[in-house]
Image (cartoon, rainbow, N blue to C red; front, side, top):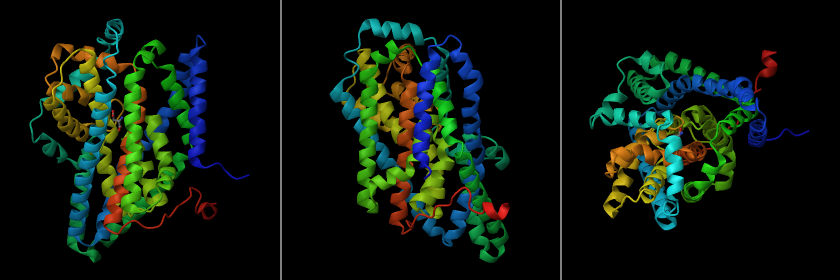
Length: 441
Ligand code: ASP
């Protein structure tokens, strides 16, 4: 019997997980059962992916740079990447703002719903911790993002997944220095990192064998911990605007892929789909990164010289889905709480949501922290921030899952476009998990 494609297996795992989660909410001991016996399986999977993220960035970026042989090429790739990332993010925020202004989801929301949401969530630790985190981030000076990018201890940077940009900085620095000492001298180190890279990619293959079971566990846990269905229903129009915007982003990516790379966009979506499904299940582009890298390199054919830089950088600074959501959420909150938004304020949202997407961590819920900063930038009263966030909190997790798909798809699209523009988009070179298995046996 032909084995089902990975994306189908994952999809079936997700659907069964959702159904199982719903069934468990109907049983008195169901929620506890899921959190005690099912959720850990999902958590282990996410941990495994995070475990290999740093070695993968290190090995693949060093391999990518040292294969270049010429630093000016790297500058070229870097510049194109950043410019294209900024453009796609601006498109995303604009789509969000246009939709929310046309559809006005905040106007129809009754005072009764606002009161109910406020009393349920305004003092919830989920909301208050986001506001506190935002004020910590806001205190930073204008150049602190540059300062934060430079590690003072390479091992410490590698020991913390949040410090991914520091690892990227260290790795690029090391890769460039390897180019400068010359091929001959750098050879042993290069061989080491080449081998490490292959090993880590094989680890991705092995971890992915458990993906269908893991997504089952992750989705069942999300379902049993989700909010009151009545509250979800009240926010349906707002959620629909975000989802419609995210869907339009997918359309935008397909147009970009077919225009700039001349590849079939549906083929692109199919090949990248396991990464998208994982993004949805884990709500974290950082956890999905190893799989995104594997899919883009092996299944789409982007050369490592491009993907090893574009994808890790994208996971941390390019979040099209998050910035679209921030635009929609900020205007929705303003509409619901009768806070007037001028055109100037909307333009400020474009700018701050762009910066916020660069500053957001690639982990679940990070987009909401930066939303606080976006709201403050348009003069939203500080005493109403908790109420504002309470309004959207009930649907934040499902929307987080959806926007993370777009964050990951956006990175993959840009990787393809940059690769094509520098002649580094080749043929897919799929490696199966069991290559060499016979020799090992
Ligand atoms: N969860 C998102 C990500 O990891 C960030 C966010 O929008 O909260 O890409």
